[in-house]
Length: 260
Image 1 (spheres, rainbow, N blue to C red):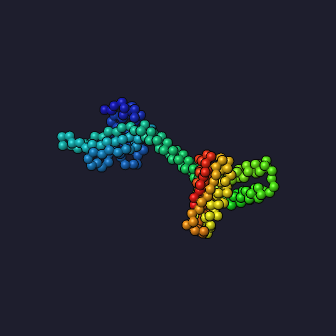
Image 2 (cartoon, one colour; image 1 turned 45 degrees about the vertical axis):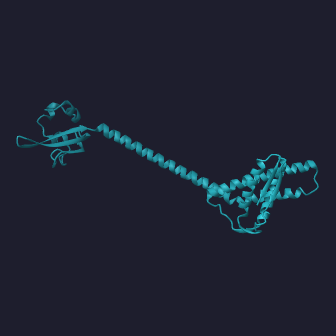
Image 3 (cartoon, one colour; image 1 turned 30 degrees about the horizontal axis):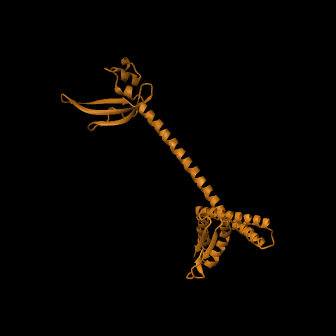
């Protein structure tokens, strides 16, 4: 006897299957080990592929259970069509593969973007001296110009130009330092310098900002500070500049006193 589901699965009629050997229905390809008459040890389950009479491959989940009936040994075998599950697995695998490729492309793009960003940072870091030198030159000539005979209107214009140049230099210094950090090129120099001179040079830049806010700026250097230190004078002045700038910024009509 045979049920309708088996007939549909194997794509045969009841007349074609009743009385036939199983291999002619389940394994019509021939020449291969029979998936039914295999060695069994207890209950066994696994996925196999059968072929119907027309050669179509059908993935199934097979369960085999040995039985004894009136002293004779038999086995009960059932198969479940898992074509849909296999199709879903293929779709899922395809989705995973596509996702993996998408992630690999995204990782590649991110790596290229990071490399481009580092290249930009390396460029800015290498241009540090070339950018600062002309700007310092402009500030130097503006300082010399202030010592010539200028009228009040010209002095006002000059003062504004100097303030703008100092602000620009501060911004450029911050930008270049950040770029150096990104490029891994922020080196701390170890050279001898006079801290008093460094503080005075920084104070000269801060004086115009204090004057604009009607503040008075005093600089006091402790006598215990040695006349020579070993370190990075530019970083030292940058720290003093940041502290002094905040003092000027947050003081209105008062006195800013800087201690060294």
